[in-house]
Length: 274
Image (tube, rainbow, N blue to C red; front, side, top):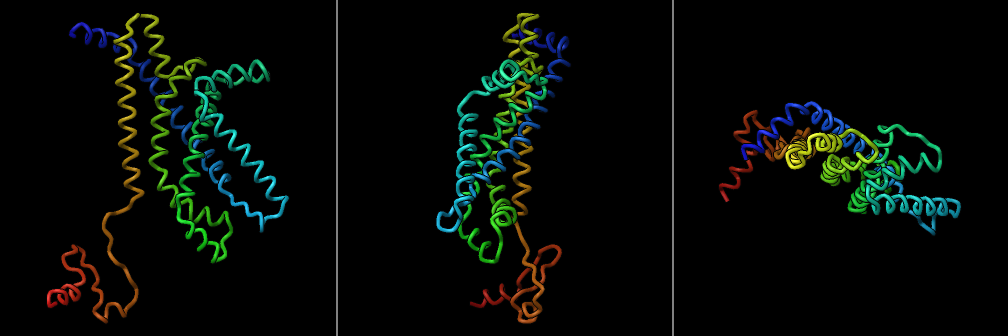
């Protein structure tokens, strides 16, 4: 055990900065890929939920919408049904060989993580939209809102709160899954691990260091995401605010004191006499 710890300390002394740079690359790829993937997912998920009414919509509108749904469905199933490593090889090397498109490693890395995350987020967003009570849409339509106004001002704010945990989950998954981008020579944390192992042949020691770094990144990310969720939840306690003067003069409501020592005293006193 003592020898193992000394080996890990020796590796960190020699390659500590390389591990940190690799971890920074991993976080950058995961963060940018998740953000762009969320934008793609919101766009695709929203387009998939556009209603098609055969009795109201003309044929020239129904046909493009159905074709669009087919294309978007193929995109979602393709990138959800294949490993990210294969997608990386196909996009980076395949596009170069077949279409003579030469992409930089960083461009390819961001693109791969983004479109992969977008496919998963599309289904999450679609499910979040469908989960909202249809009465919300009917009420918005009743006051004259268009479909896009309803989605932007009524449905999306509610759906966003429901899918925030899945956004965080995708970010944590991307922190780990970006390790497959080492196949296109992106120097992320896993690539640094392979380089150290190839130099020192310290498989277990280097793997332990990398595992702890990945664990630290995911735990810190989980903690920050939970704080974000709590922020979106808002305060746990609320004070009733009203501008109706009749509420005060009738004794139905007393303005809250700064220290909340007594509220609704008339109602409490009335309850005590029952």
